[in-house]
Amino acid sequence: MKNILILSALFLAFGARAEGPQVSEYSQTIAGNNKVGLLFMKNVVAEEASKGEKNVMTSPLSLYYALSLAYNGAANKTLNDLSLYLGSPYTELEQYNADAQGFQKSLIIKEKAAPNEWSPKPPVFGIANSAWQAEGTFKFNNDYLKTIKKYYGAEFQSLNFKDAASADGSNGWAENQTN
Image (cartoon, rainbow, N blue to C red; front, side, top):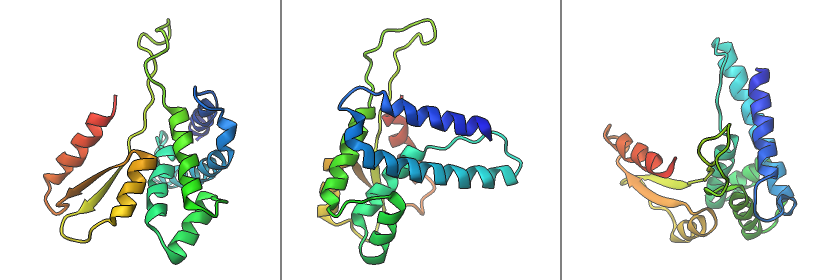
């Protein structure tokens, strides 16, 4: 369990050294991400340890951005609950989104660094977001789709989740987005 927490702490600290705008500009977003990530990891590690698992890999940042996408489509109690869970002190959703977008951009590393003895390839770090809708159930609101595209670069996809082959579509999308 200690290895997992160390890995997480290194990842969260890594974000503070990323190129781009000073990370302190996004301190509220970082605090929310850390809160969500550490709570998530604590619960996942405890659950997996109870099953005898010794090595667990999670992506707290992915969870944070997935919940941020949901936050933009939420209303009433769900909106309030997500706001509290995400640690969002914002009264304006647009400001929350702008800071989440800035933080996301500050983390992205393109192939700039020179290879070295520890890394023959330059490090690359990117973030890809998408919203998936089950065909024939409901339609995402157009304003929601515009917002998640603008702030999160999120793509929109529609799939027939009852068709086992639809997993190929989402897995293919993920494969095309990753290095």
